[in-house]
Length: 126
Image (cartoon, rainbow, N blue to C red):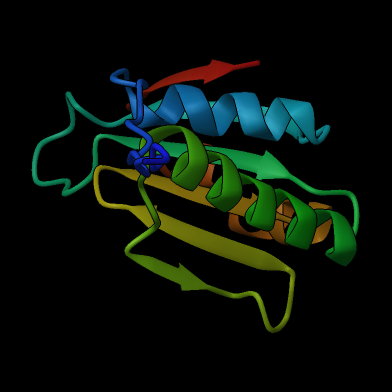
């Protein structure tokens, strides 16, 4: 009797902070001026971190967005709970519950100045 191969479910080995995967994905696709805004010490905020990055064009913004989703799904089995802004490509938001990713084109990032709005938080630039 021939042996049957048993399909096994791949287990995700990543057990760290999802923001580490996100930042690594952004670096791999040449995200510009990555900032991690730690909001854990700010009262009445529903998120732990904002990750802000600039894409150099609409295509680059879309690529960063797609790659972050691909990496987080593959490595941690996690998908964003909400994605917004893909249709215009100027500012895309990925909601990973405790971590929010903001991917901007340069003009939009300059206009909204999220780092200035949250300047009372700990901000780390990579």
